[in-house]
Length: 107
Image (cartoon, rainbow, N blue to C red):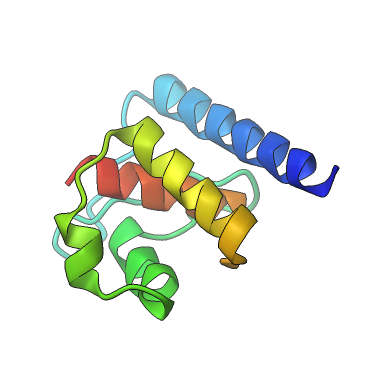
């Protein structure tokens, strides 16, 4: 039941991010850090940029070369991140998962 709850939370977070993207017309903001993306969260303001999240969350188990060599679309990255959370115990909030998936699928 717990993994079902996590899956539901990921789906809800994705839908909220998608709704924010459609409502705003664009989720990209220039943060002065080389054009990295900022993704609206469901709570208070901006979650953070995908590159920094990849660096802090994904490199605890993988080197950046492995992440950079993978090419997936948004759905592929979402599935991969969900698997890392559910099966491997990665500690990544639903908002961070969305930001990471968007960043990786758009690079």
